[in-house]
Amino acid sequence: MRGGRATHAVIVGNGIAGYTAALRLRHMQPEWRITMVSGESTFPFSRPALMYVFLGHMRYQDTKPYEDRVWRDVRIDLVRAWVEEIDVGGRRLSVGQHKIMEYDRLLLALGSKPNKFGWPGQDLDGVQGFYSLADLDRMTRTLRRTRRAVIVGGGLIGIELAEMLHSRGIPVTLLVRESSYWNNILPKEESEMVTALIRAAGFDLRLQTELKEVVDDGHGQASAVVTSTGERIECEFVGLTAGVSPNIELAKRCGLPVGRGVLVDRSLQTRDASVWAAGDCAEIVGEAGQRGLVQQVWYTGRMQGDVAAAGMAGSPRAYDPGVWFNSAKFLDLEYQVYGSVNLSVPGERSSYWERQDGRASLRLVHKDAALIGVNAMGLRLRHEVCERWIREAAPVHHVIENLSEANFDPEFFRRREPEIARALEGQLA
Ligand SMILES: Cc1cc2nc3c(=O)[nH]c(=O)nc-3n(C[C@H](O)[C@H](O)[C@H](O)COP(=O)(O)OP(=O)(O)OC[C@H]3O[C@@H](n4cnc5c(N)ncnc54)[C@H](O)[C@@H]3O)c2cc1C
Image (cartoon, rainbow, N blue to C red; front, side, top):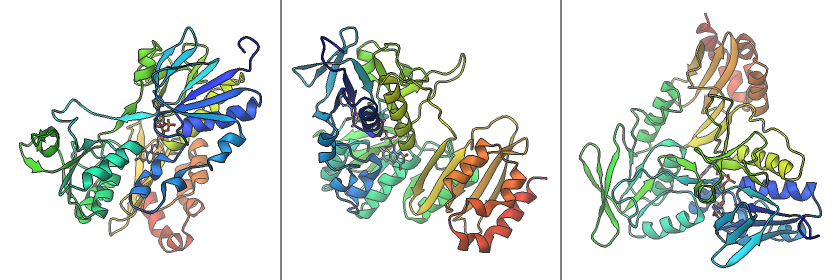
């Protein structure tokens, strides 16, 4: 409260972390003034759905989690503008070029930025990441004159982008530094499965190949790339999908401590008592000697938005990351991961089953005979069951005996369960 007026909470960024916090805060503090400022769009939308907008499976308006009128109904002011500066001591923001906004509590929910590694030509027209609405627009424009595309970097966004280009009949070459697709995240067999799938779908996948430079056509547009193997590939579109990094520029400029992300404690408060950070941009400082925690997925953004709002409202609680989970698709191959997989935990072992056609697999990772991780490809497992098994360190024998409990597709499991269980059990000895 300043000068008798209602406490003003400002949230910068209207992604999942920002809008979850705004709604939670409204619930906890019905009288506060709440403003959400975001540069990309006035209304929140679902970032993972951008691909489906491109493919024509969804309209942009259907990616909004709430109808536009909801924000007025819950008295959350939406301002579309970029925040340029923060005067942390004076609790003021410069919004756009001329406007100053005062705040009592501030949340930074600034998201991520696609990585660029200083490649010559990386800022040419036709070279871009795939993160924002502006990226979607830029890509749509470039593709009108694109005959061939190159994607730099593997991972989930790289494959999404390849699929999007493929849908327009544009040939795609993928340059991937690793010796097998995403093998820094996926275990060896699953990575090989994805590598084979990408090739079978007709993509030109170049492993152990990096981008050296993007060639200018003489008019500021990309016309080719040169790879680390010295090859020149003609292309008009270059997609940069070599990961994302927390968007920390604004916090850094205003003097808040940053590491890989905006540094926060477990209640997501920064060093300044009036400022919090949540979602992709935040880094939760670890215990002495431990690496900080940066989480860049949808559900963790929602959980962090919730915790940050509690702190801003005056009821701080510690963020509990729970059991790690991610799910996605590699082309039409479902992928789910729970807990610790491919992290080389000392003493871990894994039992692995793969279907003969190489289009489905299940890996149970265990330590001291207790389950610590699950990786599933081409199978859909029940989230609550896998999470419970890992949280409770279920004996791996018990997990194998009760696999059907975790399965979404009873028909498949009735046919396959004995074979899967036998294969997994056989590797425990
Ligand atoms: C193409 C794509 C597909 C994805 N698919 C999945 C998926 O399937 N599953 C999954 O779990 N995750 C997925 N993710 C990741 C997920 O979308 C992110 O983890 C999540 O959106 C992060 O939410 P956030 O609220 O932290 O930030 P963001 O959603 O990035 O929102 C941050 C907002 O802050 C705004 N902002 C930044 N700086 C300023 C400033 N200075 N002034 C004003 N506004 C500012 C930005 O414009 C942006 O709108 C995907 C990401 C991408 C890019």
